[in-house]
Length: 356
Image (tube, rainbow, N blue to C red; front, side, top):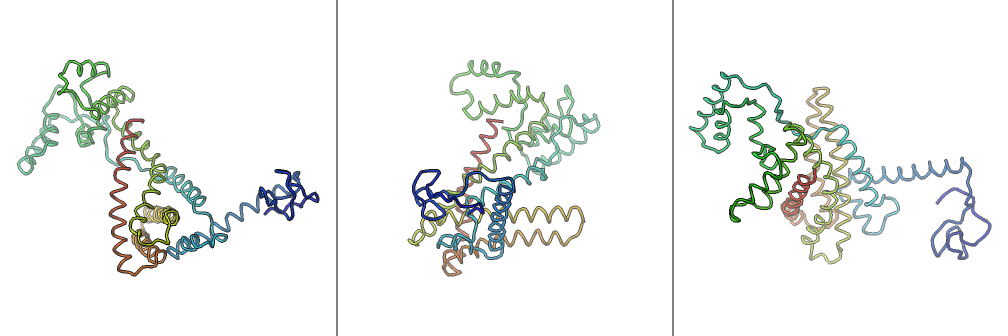
């Protein structure tokens, strides 16, 4: 409700119905004067901000320290004191990913820079001797690839080139073809049974285009790929919400008093808590790196442990079952949730590769 002056006329300006009180019983619009001065507009804006903040911080307080309480209150109809879970999810996820992408560098930490200094002849020999000794213990294909590359003295090779061989095949941009047309022409000459499959064709064509676009700079290719994928994380998490709620619905299928929407509310508040907790963990980790105080490392570990306990305790309060049943379903939820999220993760990973 705003603090503007109520109109003396009792006709609704929106739908024309007669207004019996301050609000129209037909459309719900408040019957206030349509024109407001700057001071009234400012007061209305400040009130809405602090009204939102008040609900938000009250909800956060209970959300952090009373696992399952807010979700339980919400599904039983006590909603005026708490922020709507969808609004709160959108707000907290926006803040979380803003901080995540602004201050956290989630890119690959390995060195895949093709601009490394080329190895000298002596360094090549040392690398070859080391790899041949490794072959005596474990004859893996990656070691053979590295040996083959080192023994090819017709081209320079760096440590970054060797590390690049460890990258997944669909990321590795090295190709024997200089254009997509050249690759397609080579494929057309092969018998049908010897041609590359759909996934491999897509990967090779993409690799050729990336190699041309970034002039063979593997570091830039990997950086952009991971950034493209990570910027799809908010969408992936949002898509995972109904699946997580579905797993809960399956686990508590005998509890007929719980509807799918109730499980969705529980899931939303659980995700919101996770966003807030991860921000705290990031903060403690940053403080540890800055101050070198070991106590912040303990706070990070405590936050991770609390995250697991929180879900268990939330399930106990929300679904009101014994600790034995709750613990069993907690383990099943983590297992089944992982199974459900894995294909979603792989799907987003593939589409990130295709589209970036």
